[in-house]
Amino acid sequence: MTGHENKEVRSANRKFFARIIPLLMLMLIINQIDRSNVGFIKHALELDVGISSAAFGFGAGLFFVGYALFEVPSNIMLDRLGARTWLTRIMITWGAVVFATGFITSPTQFYLLRFLLGIAEAGFFPGLLFYFRKWVPNVYRGRATALILSSSAAAYLLSGPITGGLLEMHDFMGIAGWKWVLFVEGAISVLVVIFAIGWLVSTPDRAAWLTAGEKQALHQALAEESATRDGHSQQTSKWKLLFEGRMPYLCFLFFIMCMTGYTLVFWQPQIISRIQGLSPFEIGLLTAIPWLCAIIAINILGRLADRFHHRREMMLAVALLVSAAGTFLCAIGNPLMGLFALCIVCVGTKSSAVLFWPIPQASLPSSIVAPGIALINSLGNLGGFFAPTVFGYMEMKTGSTTGGLIALSACSIFAAITLLLRKPHTDHSDMEKSPNV
Image 1 (tube, rainbow, N blue to C red):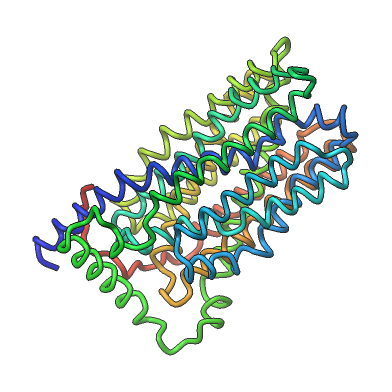
Image 2: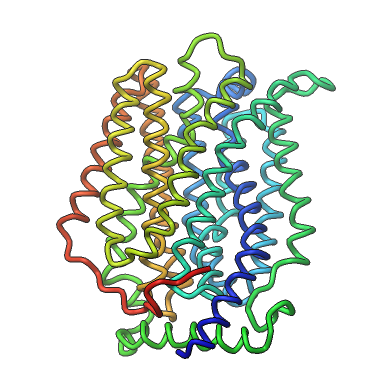
């Protein structure tokens, strides 16, 4: 690739980073808030709807069952219909389900709507990653992924104060605070779709804000990258590629990451509420601190991961060990130590995601990238069903979260050990060594 073409590719990606990624970040922030807000209304649901800790853990986890079942079909539809059509479809349906959850009156209805929320959201996050394959060469993809995951962490940073503030509206207009949370946050999702439909562009050739030279250079760069990557798998069927080689191991790694990540999300407010004398809004503010730490860490790490891309798996192992250390400290420390430990866990779990997702993005052949990323995300996200369900049951039986936290710490250590013992994977899709956006 010539220097002129490199310049055009960099220019095209600067425009994409400036115009499209901020909207994707906003959409993911809303997505994560709508997915995790039940953690803040757990106590209210127990009082008003009769949902026990075990029932809450099961219902919170049912989201991931629906999510897993429809993840691959959803990403295939995104590939066929384009990002603008399919991502906005996903967003409007999940907003409607969140809004409807405000009307539940029984645990069964809670189970049903959490399952439906998983179906509605299926394909959104892997759809964003697949969208990058249409726009962003591999050498820029680490920082693009870091920005998206920053918005995921920002969602949890904002979710506490926003959801805590909405809970303070309890009995305003005769409506319970937990209902206000679901009504307002669900409605916002629907409203943002109106803007997103007119702003998103599915592929570079449809972007009026790119020059002809930028379109051509970006198309050539992505085509060359795909040809290099796909040259190693041309004789293998699509379905065989999906179920052999690195795929099972990548699913296993992401399963472990989701076990810790989503248990943390759903139980974080409860862990912080051990600090005595806090209002719902103050608890919400304190839950923001660990996610602020995570945002700082992953944006630094995003650039380092691109610079040292051949060591991503080693760096991922270290991040998993950091997550394990923080989870263990949550189990044994006092309430204030628990807040510090949550900061470590958030840094570890979000750093793990930044380091993990560029690996399948760079290594999967083009023929299976859409269903492949979706399969990893769907099977891995079943960890978000398994861990909260078991965690809630253990808390109900023992009256403590200690045993569950120690078990999660052990799982992260095991995953890190497997990474350290594996032979490093060679990335065949690099375009250049030191990109600048």
